[in-house]
Image 1 (cartoon, rainbow, N blue to C red):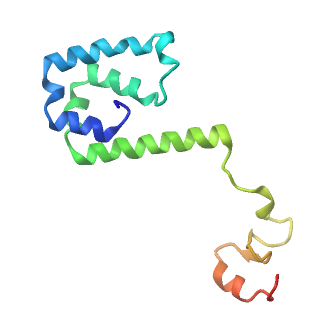
Image 2: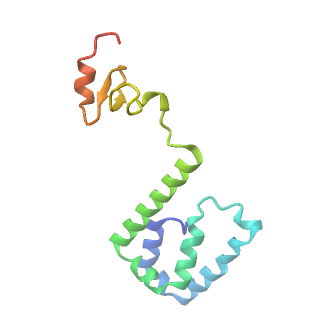
Image 3: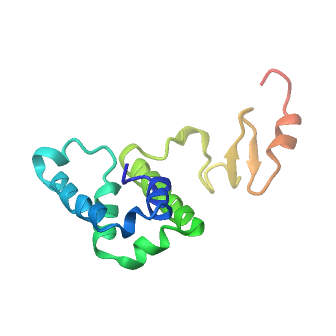
Length: 133
């Protein structure tokens, strides 16, 4: 998939990205931008990468390096993480977090129900909690 930095790296290291026939094939793939097709795309990064592959020689050249491949993968992860948080929230339970100043403590409520000061040791606080709490 063109959305995979690892696959793009493979294409670059296998010299596909310097082959005029393959570049022509990439141009052909632009039909995926059309609404009848684009609605089936699961990983939209492929369209952004397709644009870069077709228009940016530096991008094609840098794909052959492992650090750039890793950078792309990392940035893609951050993008999906941001999207997920935006769509679904952080996934945290607001009831488990103490708000500063509400209980006179800065920090979170540990699994034992004991307030842990900010920067405090959760394990030590949990160990000192009464049994059965």
